Length: 113
Length: 114
Image 1: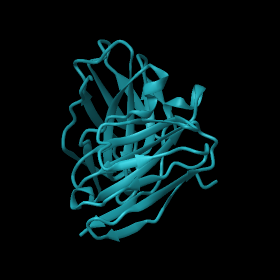
Image 2: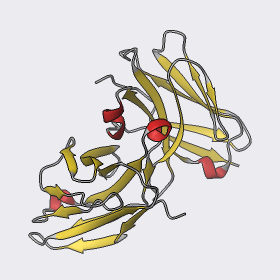
Image 3: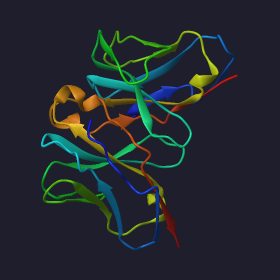
C-alpha cells in the first residue's frame, strides 16, 4: 500500500492560514487523497478528498501537486476549534476498499491566540 | 440525526471476561467498520462489513468477533479480554455511490482490561 509522510506537529496563530503538508511519493494513479481530523477525545471527522484537481469545501481546501506525489491541506483561517490531529490517507479507487482507511500518526495542529 | 452511536462510552474489564461493544447507525449505510486506536497511534482496522450478513477481517482481527444481522447494527465481541486489548474503539459507517468517500465515526468506546 502507498504510504504517506506528515510532520508530527505544527503550530499556528488563530485567524492565520495553515498549510498542512503530506508526501505520498508512491501514490498510485487510482488512489484518492483523503484528509480526516480528530479533535481531542472524539472520533475522526472527514475533512476533504481529491484525486487530481484542487478541491474546496466549507471546511478547507486541498491542493494536489501536478505529479500527485504530495498534497497540502489548507485551513484558510485557523480557529482554536481547529486544534486536532490531521490525517492524510490514500484510498484506492476500488469501492470495496473504501472501508479500509489506513491511518498513520498524522500531524498534531496547535492553534494559539 | 444521531449518525453513528457507540455504547458504552467507557468500560473496565478483568482479564478473561467477555463483552460486546455496540454500534448502531441510522443513515442506512451498507458499509460499517471497527477500528482500534492505541495511545499516540493512528487507527487500525479490526473488522468490516459490506452489508448485512457479510463481514471480513481487517488488519488486527485476532481476539475479536463480529456479525451483521441488520443494516443498522454492527456489534464487536471480545471473547476473552486481554490487557493488550486496552484501547479506544471506533465504529464507522459509509454509504454507497457518491457517499462512499465519506466515513462517519462514532465517539468511541474507551476500554481498559486489567
